[in-house]
Length: 246
Image 1 (cartoon, rainbow, N blue to C red):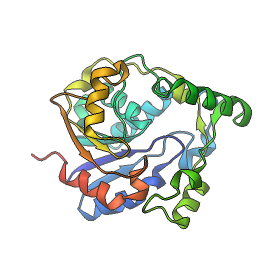
Image 2 (image 1 turned 45 degrees about the vertical axis):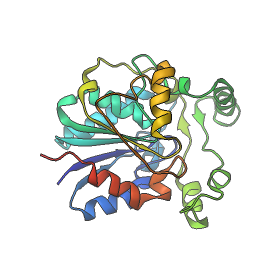
Image 3 (image 1 turned 120 degrees about the horizontal axis):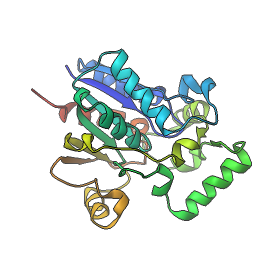
């Protein structure tokens, strides 16, 4: 049995992992899907001062209070930054880091820095105009999901109903890392880009410099950026077969 801790990216909660969670539990694994503060069933706790550090603490507290060890810590999108920092604080609790269509950013970087300047400007405008100056509204899911295999009308409707605005400070606060996480084995599950592109970014883009090396193994799962929603069975199978073994 392996212990998986699943952390979603922007706008999502633990609910987004339900199909993956069920399949992993079907394999006999112990699975903890997390809703970060201000998201999912914890949306009522949203406030302007929720930043990256709050979300890192969310994950560390699950590891601590559930007394979890030898954990496979899975982060999707923005949560790649969260799980990296949680592992940096508690490396003795983590057996493997998994990055779902994302990767670790270096010490001092913020999630918003990873987006192109024009996209960041659009997001800042949305925060100002539609998010009371501190919330980033969810994207137009129906438009993004158009033509994506595995995303039917009911799935899109569920996504629209359950996603909530993201506290913007989580995107703008920098991560603080000591380097303690860097010896941990890493699995990258790539859905919107390829292994070759990941390695190329590691070589050419300073923010992506931790995305290649001997600690990495990559698997490609082509779909849109949210494979836990469109291809949950395949994602669960990848996590299951790449889990650490004694």
